[in-house]
Length: 340
Image (cartoon, rainbow, N blue to C red; front, side):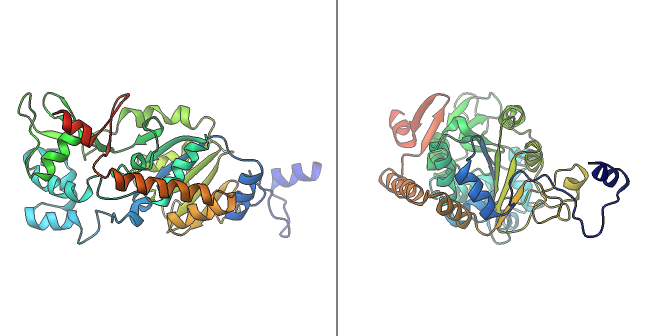
């Protein structure tokens, strides 16, 4: 004890002694995490995801050259590709956004195994909350309940008039978009915009109000398919308490201080692979491969496959019945359209 005191106080650790690291689990590897999960389990899991979770659904990164933003830039003489998501530009010239919306609109794609794995966490009773940067709504189609979702930059689920704030549902907006009619408010003739966060707009209030409570007892944070570059979304990793394991499932090694200096400055960097790491684990590969590896390690393969098979069958049988949430009331695009 005395030797440890002097070593810590005066940095007298010998070259042959590695500094003691208080690891949350014995082995900070994917296998080590899987063993801990099987033997002791997790009770409060938070997932946070980006565009990479939807790649295998056929949704490319819409910021990539050759995709919607860039083709629209040339066609509509936009100053830069992201001008499509500038709210002032949208009010002046909404046509480019609604052309892109056809490519992104929910219902054209089906959830991936990674989306269904999040649903499986909910079915197991361990999903505390799911945070997403995506607007594709594939979590909803996979059956993740609305009360578990924090859509950080909104979605097509609801729409509001920019003038009078009149609410319109997804079925109404879809009809306008795919008939090449600008969505004009039936009350005041103002422009109706999907509740997607544009440049110059604030993120939803729930994004700021939920993390304090959500992360209070979180024991596992799963980060999938995100570059951890967009703020303030990326800073969620810092909300995890010091004994909360952070699992990265991503094709690229992201979140490290060397890639994101702001993380190091704020003590928020992921430390997987470093000697001072106490709780971070990384699976570098596709998101679907990562969740299948977890399912295999946990003995959940059959359950995950059943969710996927049943979900795909249900979507095929009712492909026009995209779920629409109106508060506590659940409708579908088909039934809602029939009412009008």
